Image (cartoon, rainbow, N blue to C red; front, side, top):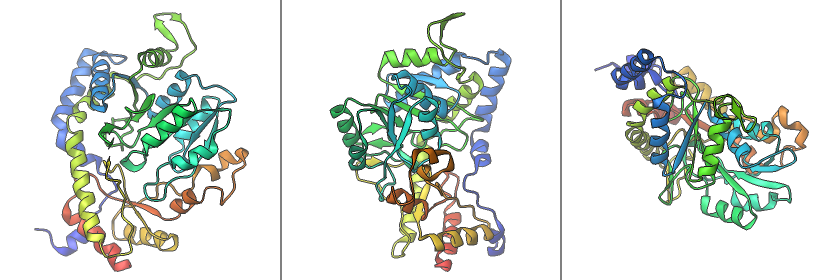
Length: 376
């Protein structure tokens, strides 16, 4: 039994990938050794198997392994025909890869405000942003729970728009019984190491029920080639390598149990924060949240000071995301100004993420809450 003093000096990271690796080390080491022995690193059998397994897990017919979640977004946009002059509606309250993919595909990102309770894109606000140049919507399933897909899909159908789900943070999450990534035209997944299903480097995948889109993305990821040295379209090098696929296939078997532990940890936090002024995550009854991040809301002056206090106490916390995309320097040319998207701006000034990873102990959570409670 550790003394209280020993517990106080223990560092609690936002995510502990070393502990996760230790829990599956023998299986991963065996998978890595097998791929090295086979010396088949590009487009190997593990990639093909992972594509089938992830697609089935997400409730989709097809999966195409790619080099990153960003490439998944870019190739998804290209596959649905997005081109220069088109507009794609998305949220400003997310990582820049979502909007950057739109720009890199030649289109214009149109930022739409969020719902304050879930931090996901607001369907009502989407309606206000549609123009004759709008071709698609990219909802981001932020922090591990799905956006309001029934309304988004209804809007898309009424306006003849495509829907690409950015499910980078939400593999395993569900909305009314449907898994993230399976509801729109294409779902995009990231296997960045810190994701709930993370590789040992970059990686990503698209999932879809549309064979034509899957086939096109499969061609686009290998320089536009359907057979060796025959190029039907101009593509790029966006392949998921076999080594990462082998690692991900091991981890996929544990994804649901890891998600359950994240949910249990979130429940502990929620119970401990009852009766305080800390705003805990809101999950609509039709959603299953997989808690890629456990995000609380605290007023900005207190939020920044609280993060500093946690750091001094050996507890890591982080703000996802401190500057909404419409106010980023790189998007100044779009002409947005402070006050244009008030919910996104308010969220950026008040949210903070606490450790919630599967290996986090109840004692660690109690310590995090104790520091926050003493600060308040």
